[in-house]
Image 1 (tube, rainbow, N blue to C red):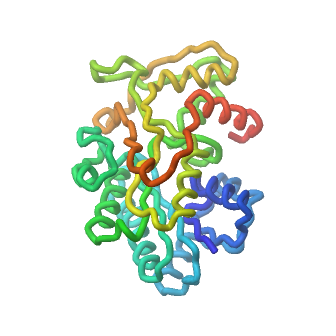
Image 2: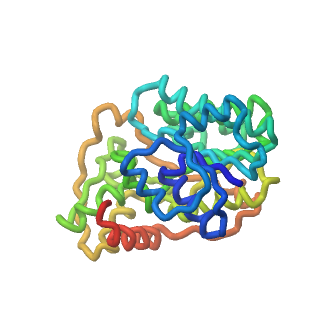
Length: 320
């Protein structure tokens, strides 16, 4: 039996689908549903579903079945623009701490989602070793909530008991409910098809031309494979980067989207929203040494191939 929180969300629902593909049906899912997120659970097999509040109450009252193989915790608010620090504290940090304490107490495998937002402006580098993690200074409340929990894991000596995954720029199917937090591919696809153009942010740093800001983009299928690698290897614990190790320009992503949609490239560069400029990450690139040394050897899907695969999916899902 496996628990997946955030099960109707982006990465969580993809994890559920992959577990189903592997024959796992005895799943306990937890989330807070709305009409859009309900679509992510369509055609999924599971034994029980709990609303997040009910699930959290079960954990706090120690009424959750402790005969679990694992608790995969993907439930969190991932907005990088929301300015409600208390909400992030309760929804991301305290929720994660409650689940981790329960899992450790019952010796249940605990795998949780962290984020590359923890690295802030990247001045400390992008290694997932403890020394670097302790130097990170996030640029927003979301990143800070993830950083705070990673530090709690380290400060409480739990790095050998749980596994944290610092996801970089994940994109792919099942993110349509994320609103403004959807990937650029998901947000721009319809406009590219209908108008033959899309927008990217202008650069406000002289070392980067417009659209040449770089991110480590990872396809959700690869991200899920890494989650299941750790599920299959309970002896692998600690905090790990989940990226590709290769930073690519936003312009590269845009060109891949136009090519996959069969359109000529036409990019408009627009100003960043007010307040975002000082919190914007101009470069991210995961150091993947630790993951490779842990034994994960599969190659990552190239950016162009990943975007093409995603566009084929978007073509067949009109509600996106």
